[in-house]
Length: 267
Image (cartoon, rainbow, N blue to C red; front, side, top):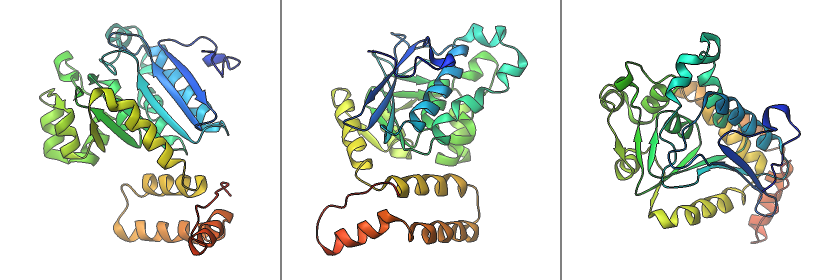
């Protein structure tokens, strides 16, 4: 499949993944394709950031999906790359992996098999994680005399709390797909052969809402993640007030009273 962003310098020759845009489904996919383990190289991290930014800016895309070819999502990063990279490059690892979090559009991670290290960290930076039953999540850096370096421990702690995060990080413990679902890391748990079906269903659900309301909700939730309840309510009120002036809100109210499906335009 042709790379839709090959004219961009950083994306002219993709390393270990491909980009697909389905304009009819309003879906953009980043597909890891360095099977069988989908190891993520240092240069690939920069390209993944650029790929998320390109899809976020593409008007043909409403929802972004991060998925992988083969049995495993990703066993993690290329270990020798850490030794070869400069301290300056390494200091930006978390910034690259945070690209899904920064996207204005919703981002789904479709996980299966080994989802370790940076594979887990970039999935944690997505808005939704769908786990196949074969999934095992892990932050195994302690086995290398290191700690997670791309936001994994911080994002995981926000999801499951301090005690469970210590159990996972300090013991390099693997979490099954079932346990991830029980703990709230994954929003859905499905059979492996149903992973794409579940992903497509969520894409279609998300694209049925107002693009403007989706962008606003994501930014509000991200911005208020560490806020007090009072501050979160204040931010929510400002966002609600702005959306009241939107064409999409007027269309939503009109469609509700007319008992029909709304046609949102993102304004």
